[in-house]
Image 1 (cartoon, helix red, strand yellow):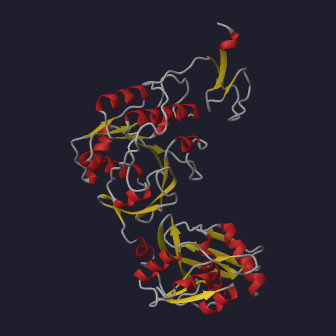
Image 2: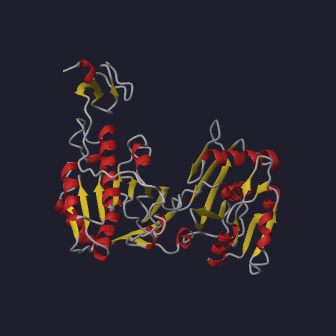
Image 3: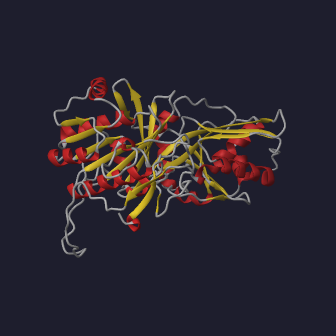
Length: 448
C-alpha cells in the first residue's frame, strides 16, 4: 500500500490528518490515532440527477401536514414539511420520547406510515410507553436498530411519511470506523439521513443528547446540517414543558409551544399567560407583570426581585430566567440615574414558571421589580410594564406593542406603562390606561 494513500484518524473525536500524532489536536487524547486507508465512503442509497434550471418548472403550493397539536404546528411554522429534518434536544427525562411517540401515532393515524427507530430502548419498553399514553396505530412501525444500512433499507421498503430516530448518538454508519456517538459518526449518519429525507421526501425527527451545560452534544455539527432545531425545556418539579424553536428554515425562530405533562402524555396549553400568572399574589413588593414576546406569541409573565443588604463581604447577584449581565446593567442605571444605593445590596431576580425572558422589552419590568423590592413598596397588581432601558436612563420603544396590549387586555389588565411612542395606540384601546414614559424615573413615579 502506498504511504501517500494512508491517513490517520482519532478514534475519540474523528480528527483526520496526513501524519501520525501522539496527541490529538481536536480532543487532546493521547495515542488515539489509527491508520486508515483513504477511500471515499459510498452512500448507502444514492440517486443521480443532472442539474436543472431553477425556474424550469412552476413552483407548487407548499404542502405541510399537521402534528398532534396546534402548539407543535406553531413551533414548526404551520406544520411538518415533507423532506425536512428536525433535531429535538432536551435533558434526560424531560419528555422527548413521549412527545415523539404521540406525534408518530397521530401522523400514522391521519397521514401515512411512520417508522420509529430506537437505539436505546427495546420494543417492549416502547410498547409499555405507548400503552400508558393510549397509543394504538396500525401504521406505526418500530425497530430497535443502530446500523444505519438496515435503517435505510427499512425506509426504502416501507416508504414512510415520517421517520423518528431516537437517538442519533446511538446510530452507526458501517463505512465509518469510529465509535457510535463520536463526531465522525454523528456527521456521517446525519448527512446520510438528511440526503435520504430530501430524496424520498419524508420528514425525519432526530433526538439529540445534551451536555451538562444544556447544549446539544456534538459541537454544533448537527445544528448546521438539519432544517430545524427544537429545544425541549422545563423544570422537573413542574408539570409544564416548553418546546422552543432555536433554528427553523420553514418558520419563525424563538417560537415556543407550551405543554402540560399529564398521566396520558403531553397536553397543549392554549392559554400559557394564565398558567404563568395562576399563583401570582398581588400587592407584594418586588413583583411585576411584564408583556414578553416569544417568537410571534405575546406572553404575560411575572418577574420577581429581592433586594436586601449584603450580610457578608461582596454583595451577591443571582438570576433565573433573565440575562445576568442585563440585570447588572439595569442595577447600575438605577444607582447612577435614580440614586438607589444598590452597590451594597444582594440582588435576586427570577422569572416565575421557569420561562426564559431574554428580550430587552423586559428591562423596565426588571427595573420596577428592583425598585419595588428596594423601597418595599408594591407595584399596582393590575399594571403591565414593557420597555427597553438605555444607559442614560431613557426608556426606548419596543416592537409589536399592539400584540402585547391585546394579550394584556385579554387577561383583564387595564393599566400599562409603555414607552412614549406606544401612546399612538391609545385611540384604538380606549378601555386601557396607557401611561407613556420617557425615563426610568418617570416609570418609577407612575408604578410605585
